[in-house]
Amino acid sequence: MAPPVDAATRKRVLKVIFISLLLDLISFTFILPLFPALLEFYRNVEAPLDASAPPSKTLLSSILGYLNAYKAAFARPIDSRYDIVLLGGALGSLFSLLQAVASPFIGHLSDKYGRRKALLASMAGNILSVLLWVVAVDFRTFLASRIVGGLSEGNVQMATAIATDISDSNSRGSTMALIGACFSIAFTFGPALGAWLSSIGTVAANPFATAAGVSLFLILTETLYLYFNLPETLPSLTKTEALLAAEKKSGKPAPPPAAAQRTNSHFLLNLVHMTFLLFFSGMEFSLPFMTYDLFGYSSANNGKLLGYVGLVSSILQGGVTRRLPPLLSVRIGVAACLVAFVLLARTNTVSALYLAATCLATTSATVVTGLNALSSFEANEGERGGKLGILRSYGQLGRGLGPVLFTSVYWWAGREVAYGMGAFGIASVGLLVLFGLKTPPGSVKAKGTAAKEEKKDL
Image (spheres, rainbow, N blue to C red):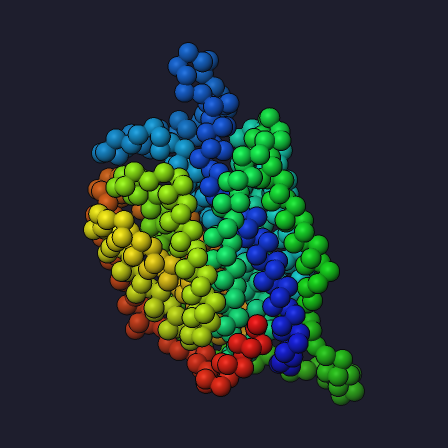
């Protein structure tokens, strides 16, 4: 087994992970508020609604044709203003499903060749993806950028694997919470910055080139920062000189890593991750529709609501989640998610909406972070990348299918039925978490140890 990482190295690597992941996620969130305007731009160019215009034979016009056929299957008519939102949701689902395919491969490559090489290879794909967005003057090129991005995005799972490599059982939860904090901070500020950059026109053929260009700059900066500052952390590749000398002297290789002591099956953890994100992502995606229908919310109002969720989530990540044992963190988050579903099924006031948003923030700050930590306890040092990659794959599968399935129920049967079914689904996840998952040895630390580890992280 590899020797424990010293405090100075751990702190240095954590700093690199935090900064690089923050750059990556801010760049990633630039495009989120731009989808409606961006896709509307491509539709106006390649598939105009003007009946007098000659019929278009572009890829986008074909996709919109299939979309209209899908809409026609609903009992309730769907206004044409939702076409762009549905298309954006389909692209988001495609991105998540591609990540579900790629994540296990990236994880296994990192177990074989090292975290650093796998992460830098992933960053090369990210650079190509954003570069395609910069030059995307047609929908076909933009779609190619999303496909490349979905297949190459590996920063999050590599950051999780690296955090596992450098932390022991006592510090695992607090380290994972730092990664979760990056999400909260990025989703608080990234979308607003992306929307502002999109108002700065530089290239007439691509009105979003400014936002894409800044995103490319951030990705390039992140790649260079990782290249010069990130050491290899895979235990099998980071043996100390003393250990190598001892092997040479004895003529025998060091014993292989001890197998992890299994407490929870990976299948159960993966199932919980997928099922939870199936319902949670559906709720996230449908929220703007609900606020528009109930309160007439504009994009600015929804931006404030999501900003509130991100802010509360970041505060919880930094101050509460890092102190909680992983399993307790998951249980709290799932319970908060159930409350949110119940509130959203019945709410008719803005105050109740923000109460539900507070529950969503609690969920965002706890569940995925806790599941990542639990999964890391069930894998030895030679298989962490692959196991965490499979966990992410299951989660992305749920995230890819959730919006399509949930909004379908929303339009077929209405808000109350959709969120009621969501509450039932999350309650089922809660039963799995409460009675199926157990606390791994070492995941609950003493108060004195917790205080020491928090000081190391700061």
